[in-house]
Length: 104
Image 1 (cartoon, rainbow, N blue to C red):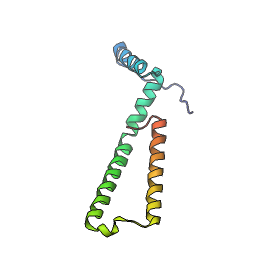
Image 2: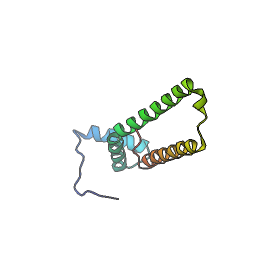
Image 3: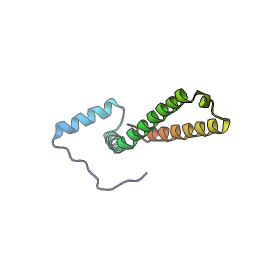
Image 4: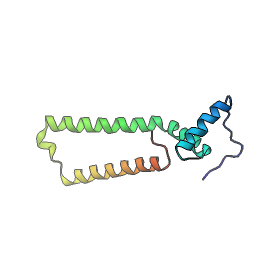
């Protein structure tokens, strides 16, 4: 774990900090962990949105090709294995993001 000494998060007033503290308590986290999770979630929002859009586009294109070329709807085993491996790797990336609290 990397720690940055002297890194403080200023709040405009005690009411703002109280809102964050209550939200952290409701989530079962320390205030520090809650703020860290929120920062990581925000920082990863664009990459996560891009990945979701890419997966949706893949599903659309896959279905479109199946309609146009139904004879190609049964890919050979090498394609099936490559597709399964890609899906597994994407799932691992997503699980890693969620474990680090970075999924949007």
